[in-house]
Length: 480
Image (tube, rainbow, N blue to C red; front, side, top):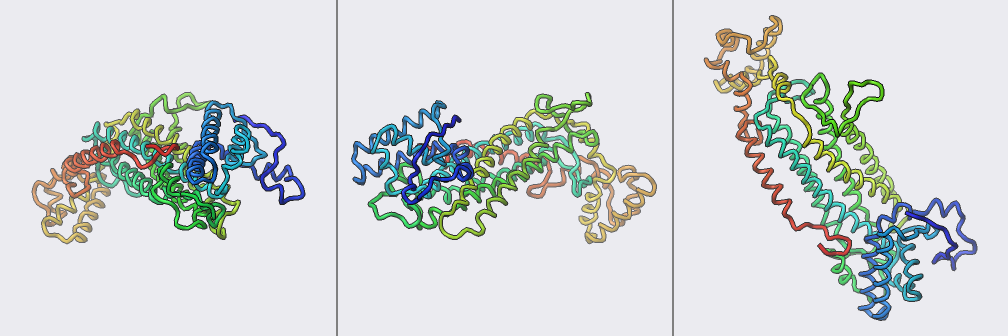
């Protein structure tokens, strides 16, 4: 982005006796970041110009000149040939001034029946709408990576953990599909935003609407909005859609951080469950042997960054009276950074997952813990009519006995188990094997192979349906 600073006359200078102080100009300018809204500023302005012509607020020729001039400006921006002027403060004034320079007095009529207040509301709604669609697509890619790796490892057993202590054996596919469920909810949350994001505010003007004969419904149709705002004051001051979006992003980042933490632990020598891909890892500047899990560590670290954006936006909004306040300028950098951060992370994590090597022997060895099937013994007693609390106590005492003797459950003879656990039946030793424990977890959503196979099939069906969706997010032009 190139910048220059010629002398400019601000549209409000008629009211003031002195020029704006240089320090205030530098402090209040936002064009160095809100220029990113230019696709939406141009699209919204084109729709507005067409509406002004249809309504007779400008001539048809003036409307045509406006549209042609705006398209020229868009081409210049995309070619990197447009000069952004910080003295004009923001993307809106820069585009409007450039239009007037290109087409003359007709360009000065573009601002008829609108304000920067409803312009920025329009632009950010369109930005969030597009960003949501892109992130939903990226989430599908991440979920596909998890499903594919789960499909490759439907028989691989590892310990499931509670309190980071070995708890019960599970299938790796079951573990990976747990994250699929989290990311599925994240996609649903993003998709659920659409009805509240896709509301057209242009025509609210500064706050009270306008007395000019505008057609907001026409502009809404041109830009792909479902409806127009019901209240002009809310139209210019609502930022709920940004807060909802960043809130959904914060939840998504939390899930990504949890997944990252699993990978970080699994990559340690103490766990040794995975081998990091060389091309997605880094080494140490001093220790030649190191391979560091930079991808999941950076994802874990950037989670706090998105949390900070959410808390910052909530704090900005909490004390603002109706309607527009300049504080709203603070919403954009947080929004842009959230979108850009997730736009980097989701494809990168999908690639990271696809290139991981899972170490079956280490996982199986860890799952073969001396007491990892203790709950299976308690379940066996319950099936024989022993109340669960009594069964829990019996097995707990048996575990204590084994610990005192330096043995595991599988080391005991079946006769000893039957003696120490009244109610147990012959054949119990077979039920305490890892494979038997996994096979027994047939409750809905359980880790039994039959259930994991069903879950994987359901996931693939859902992903295929989502991949074929027509989409909820028209692009900047309003066309799908």
